[in-house]
Length: 442
Ligand code: XUL
Ligand code: CO
Image (cartoon, rainbow, N blue to C red; front, top):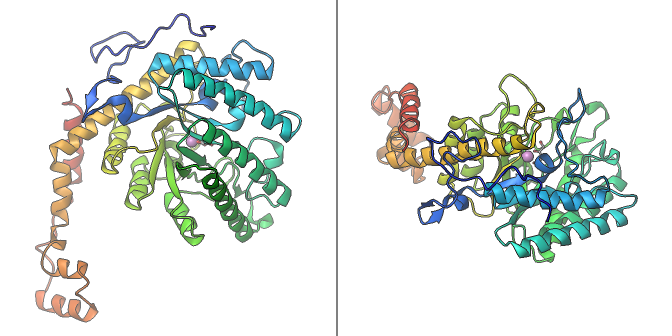
C-alpha cells in the first residue's frame, strides 16, 4: 500500500527532556495508570473532516494544504483518504476516528447514488478495521448543513421536503455508524437556528427538531444500536442563533420533549467559549446533570469571536477538563475527538503531526495534573469544608426535608446575625495551589 508520509515514522514517546519535534514528551500511550494504558484513559480520535479534508480554505482565501491524497476521482480519493487516515492514526497511536457521512464520500447526482458510493467506502473502511482491530469508530454524524438544500436548516427547515431529506440522510449515517461498530452518534445542529425572527416560526422548528431526534433514536434502537446519542451544543455560527446554545439550554429542550433519557452531551471547548462559558463550565453542567458523554477537543482564541478550532495547547484548560472527566467516572463510550485544524499557514504534512503531538501532549499533561490535583486532595477538601454547614444542624435538617419557612424563621430569629458559617472563598490561594500542582509534576 502507498505510504503518504514516507518521511515520518511511528511517533515515539521520548519524555519531557526530548528535543525531537516528532516525539511525544508527555503522551506515553502504553503507560499503565490505574490498571489501564494512557491511550484508554484519553481515547483520542481523529476528525475526518479537518484532518483528511480541511485544506485551509477560509472566507478570505483558497486552500493552502494539499488534501487531494493524490487522486482527482472522488471515489478513488475517498479510498486514498481512508488509507492516509489509517496511516496517520497508526503513526500517532490514535485508536479512534469520527466522521460526517460526506467526509467519507461526497454527494453524487442522486441520493440513491450518493448512498451507494457511501456504502462502498464504509465497506472499505470496515475491511481495514477488520485487518487492524485497534482502530475504532468513536462516533459518526451526518453533514446536514453543507448542501444548498440546507440553507434554512435541516430538521428545522421551513420545508417539509428538506425535513424528509434530512431524515433519509441521518438514517443512512446511523446505518454507517452501526456498520463500523461506533458507540456514539452525534447531532450537531449545523444550521438549526435562525438569522432573523422576522421570518421564523420558532415553536414549529423546535417541535420538528424534537420529532426528528425521536425518530432517529427509535430507528437506531430498532437496528440494535446500543451506543450513546450526543447533542453538541454551540451558541452561534453558522447561524446567528443556534438552538442548541449551550448545555443548559439543550437540557431544557430535552426535558420539554421527553428526550432527556436518550441523549448525552458532546462538549466542544471552542463552542463553550463562544457561549461565553469556560470549557470547564460546560463539562460541569453536563456532569452535574448526568449527561456527560464525549468531548470535541480544541480551543479558540480569546481575541477572536469565532470558531477557530485550534489544536489545544492550554494546560490549565486540559487540566480542568480532565478533572471533570475523572470526576464523571472517565470516558465510557466517549473520548477526546480532535475537532481541530492546523492553522492555514501551517500547511505542510509535518504540521499535521506537530499539531496532534501538541494536542495529545497537552491532554496527557492535563490528565496527569488533574490526577495529581485529586490525589493532593486540598482542593476537594476545601470545597467539602466550604459546605460543611450542610452536614449537621439546620443544614442537615433542610437537606433531610425537615424544615419549612416557619421553622427557618424561628431559627434565624434565635440565631441572630450569621457569622460562624461564613468564611473566605480563598480563590487566589486555590489558583496558586493549581499552579503549584502543575509545575511539580514528575
Ligand atoms: C462545528 C462542529 C462540528 C461537529 C460535528 O462547529 O464542531 O464539526 O463536531 O458536526
Ligand atoms: Co465539534
